[in-house]
Image (cartoon, rainbow, N blue to C red; front, side):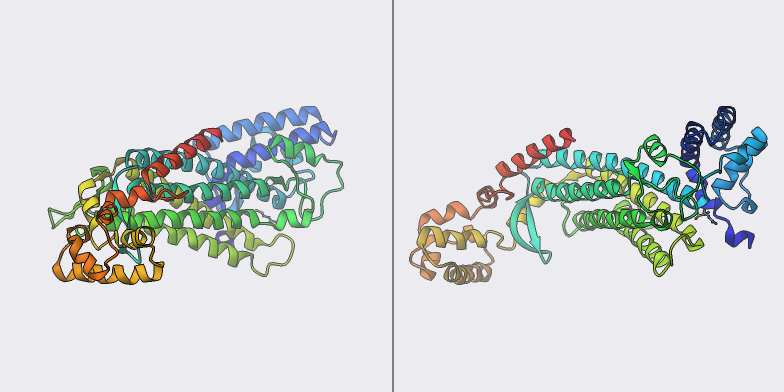
Length: 444
Ligand code: ARG
């Protein structure tokens, strides 16, 4: 029973939040005349000492004392005696743990938001540096149209922007204080829940005591947002794995983010990227675990809910590490611009530009232009040549309306530079996007 019942191995990390909640509660009990000022002072002084002891690693955790809430109270009793027992007036561990976990989650969101902003900064810096660096854009991982590396990195900037938005939404919704909901029904003591809510930085107290002690939506919503964020990192991680492979050779990870092989001296393995790709599994596991813990629980608190913290703590650690590694990889990676540009021109990536030229320069309907371009690509393929290596006569033999001007759109540079539509890959547009992003980043 002792071992299945205890959560101290996991929830000891909540100690600072637990003590902050207790202090707010204590001050409110004094302000409302429920506790004497003398008891209040003894409790606040004792809580300071308990916090220092735990921070210094001096507290021995004992499964018989179940959780962090009991450990703090028990130590407080050792230190200040009877007054310690008055702290739990008008409170239950049910509203206490909900409050602690919300405070922890809110702090985690704030930390992650700062980390995500640093990652966006890294993406912007590298995107600016590579606003003109050509690379193949892919669909189906088949060469599609030329893009710039800066444009590609800015795609991730946008994903992270949405990730931060989702975390901010989650933070706003979670920021209501459960404290004072007591076990489930509220309390007969004349407490002031608005006071404790404000003291702990909450926007307001929760409106329903049953909901307050049985709600873990905030943690689930956090995990849902983190799943999307981790999925974004895993996609970039996969691209790094592909781009660093010999077949691509687009980028090289720094020594700090690659490892060697114990048997093959030439190897530079992208271990960090592979681990980032894999960590999403843990983050997704946390979401599933918590959802299954909560499924079908009758109101209000059930002990099942003690299983809520371990997966969330694990997921946050996994994601935080992934984000730090990804930020480092992006900051350090070396780009082989020549290889990228060569690949950008391979696979007839400017065929769409030829078709577009036929529409604009020779007034063909796009469907016909597509057909004519297909025949020209086939001819180039048969000769093992690039599109711009065909002669005007070769092309005119397929469609007489083609003129010398067509050669102006067949190069990779011209192709990328021509994509000037809003949000397009033209270096001019990419620089504009970076500028807008920099302004947004400093405005927040
Ligand atoms: N250790 C518990 C948890 O993490 C604290 C709340 C316990 N409440 C109770 N009535 N047993 O959920």
